[in-house]
Length: 340
Image (cartoon, rainbow, N blue to C red):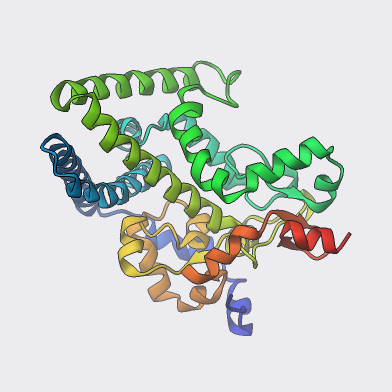
């Protein structure tokens, strides 16, 4: 992990909201191009994968891997739509987001509401819950029964978090407005219309390619993309230098800048993930389109030294599971036990 330099620490006090306002305006032609160069390759790779299966060319199923990458990118465009930053037109962004939600198996309006809550409270120990990865403090964990501790350990296990978890979330949990049952009609409409769209799309694809090709091709794509998405979301907030605070001490700009990571990925992965690794900037100003986040780093290179996590660093983040309020850092179960 990179330590924050004194210069970067001083610059963290900048009026970032005012600075980033100049990056908020999207180029609508660029947005349309980004949408096209994401959807067309995804559809093409999906069709080639199903054709490879149908004609017995199993080696062709390797195309599932890049197809999953494009599905991640589709989700990132849906994500920008949710923030109203893709076309900066609420009507266009919402309807594109809802349509893309059929491909990502994510009811757009439900997700947008939960994600807005996440942005408004990320790093706030008193506002944990909706839209977040469940994270307990060391004290809270110690107060659990043995069953509660076992359940939390299983929840935080990598095989569950990045394997079974995405399957449950994208295929099953999001079919109902979990956590929003009493949130009025909108969550139900969002979930049910998305489910209907998924069912109609699946029926059409099965009619064209058959149930075998559909299941062999589409399920792995969804699962791989879902695992990658959960991994990204995890690393963006569950890293060694992250900061959490009680409500009385929580401040938006500080929490955004120091509670979210800069996941320094290779250029090709930045492209597939819509630059969402520049997450501290995204949390500072969610209205900045994903394709402009690298511009911010170019113009303000001091941001590269804050919360920087490399691919190698991110592998070490997996062990982090509990917030130690005394040491003000995320720790592993082993570290929490040693400090008991």
